[in-house]
Length: 305
Ligand SMILES: Nc1ncnc2c1ncn2[C@@H]1O[C@H](COP(=O)(O)OP(=O)(O)O)[C@@H](O)[C@H]1O
Ligand SMILES: [Mg+2]
Image 1 (tube, rainbow, N blue to C red):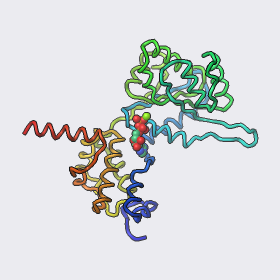
Image 2: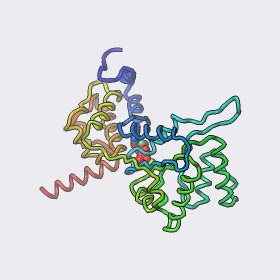
Image 3: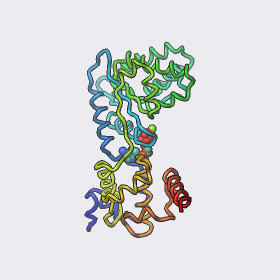
Image 4: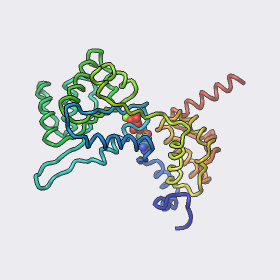
């Protein structure tokens, strides 16, 4: 294979593919280890090896929607999959991630937990029985960490339901002797803080919006070194970083979608590289959020003209 020295060796082969294949490649779901994601994963690893004790530390991973919380949790789950022991015939599941129930109701929380343990419970059972079953099962399969994503969904409940839900969280954190990890928005953090015991127990990890930092430069450079464009992109300039921040407000999902969009366009129009001009094309079909901001900006400009 010749050239493509702007790409990492393992990714050069993809630049050889045809237009449609490369577009599909650009749009495919992937994991990229950003600076914050790496730090969050390291924190989770650390908590996983924490020896059981009376008051286990808990972690709240919080940040705006689209900052990559669920991605981090999925990656952590992939790194700690259930293991089947052939000798004992027992499956151990070190990390369990459960869904938030549609309504923050106690028995539904246990119902979801049983689901996550691959043991959907008899739905007619009383709450305390579901609770006991959860507890027993978790011990039996060697759960060492419990993760609850989208914890802010509790805010859809009534005030009373929210108090009850926080009690359930407190019970899980106190009783199971495993670190409890919650992920959600800042509103979830504020809700957790209203419970003094939980506030004391939870450490907070904030996934901050991107700003013009070396970490952003690193993210753009990584994208430039894997996206299958045949010419080197100009993702390393300060002007381009500012442009990206301006169009995305520093939200991870928007940055990924924006770069993917201009990369696809660069494949289609034959330019084969991302440059500052790539972001100006009026025919650029941008993700909704970025688009809304651009239109807003244009209207504002028009209004001041
Ligand atoms: N580390 C990452 N690697 C690749 N894509 C990511 C990463 N973080 C976020 N994304 C992109 O952003 C989208 C939203 O991320 P998600 O984890 O669902 O955000 P949140 O849970 O904080 O709302 C993902 O579907 C993915 O396309
Ligand atoms: Mg999420």
